[in-house]
Image (spheres, helix red, strand yellow):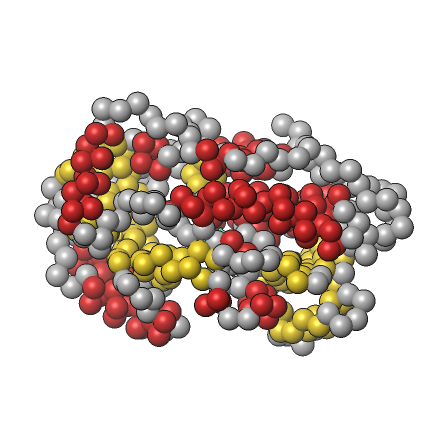
Length: 413
Ligand SMILES: Cc1cc2nc3c(=O)[nH]c(=O)nc-3n(C[C@H](O)[C@H](O)[C@H](O)COP(=O)(O)OP(=O)(O)OC[C@H]3O[C@@H](n4cnc5c(N)ncnc54)[C@H](O)[C@@H]3O)c2cc1C
């Protein structure tokens, strides 16, 4: 399939020189589209190498068109997880009901994709690794916009000047903090904490998700393909975010173990596997909501600007669409201020619709009271006999622009 979309203007004499912080989903996607539109791109990633692993993530609606235009749709179709069932358990471990995954997640069967986060990151990186400079194991230390561009000092001691800088460094973005101040101002806590880790598949699970609930607590085991490893997930309701635990992995383990101390089913074994896990990922479920996504020559993309939380399943899709739209705005507008304004204008409504997916009962898989759990269970039993739910309008609420007109000679600085 021939990729379409933003194209490079060979007449443009002055290349925009852009630094992107973060090489997960939004960073490499943005790097790809900026390179195609004629920018010189550098990506700095604090990890020493591309980060593999991670829980399965969804690519849906408009984001499918982004990966199609990048030419990686066939590769991602091959990587599609294609689980066959999702089984819900009662507190005692007995089966409540078993459903097709699309009936639960709201995706469009045969169209939307679910892939390992690492597979998506690898596919994106593979599209840009030869055209873009990657600086692994480094990070931005300071940003100074007082001159003609952005003077950047890196933790390694390097100093460089860029025309533009984009923070694609995730929910807890350091770029956002250095521009706009502490995360607390923008973080909307959704009342849950979660722990993700891998553990041995000693249950014989294959291509399926098993989810156990009691009010305010959930434990899930996800078998991706026939792997001998499971993705384990422990999620719990917590009225206030546990700020101390967020900075301390030992405190995270203790908190999870305490919350699940009297839980049934296979939870005790999961808690003990969590204690030994070397890939524990603990965080709060929350969203980033900001009044502006840029300041001067620095902008934000993906989770850094508008994380929707895992409860929406839309984090990677927003990251992919946001990256495309930001690159398109920069290719269309010579002036970066106008470009950043256009990016916000065109993407904000899409973000708002997707973040709103959790406003009213969006966290329905994780009820916090016995009554809400009973209502959810009734709804799940009904789903067995109902036709597949239609696609959520929010997933496709943005239509991507076609090839952007290109900056005129004279330089896009
Ligand atoms: C290891 C990992 C596991 C994840 N697992 C899940 C999951 O199980 N479920 C889920 O819903 N979402 C998960 N996510 C988040 C999900 O991938 C995002 O919603 C979505 O991919 C948005 O992508 P992003 O590129 O904007 O941000 P992210 O995917 O968060 O990527 C941010 C990148 O920036 C890098 N970075 C951070 N700080 C700096 C810095 N100061 N300098 C340079 N680089 C920096 C990070 O190492 C990372 O590579 C995970 C993210 C990561 C990194």
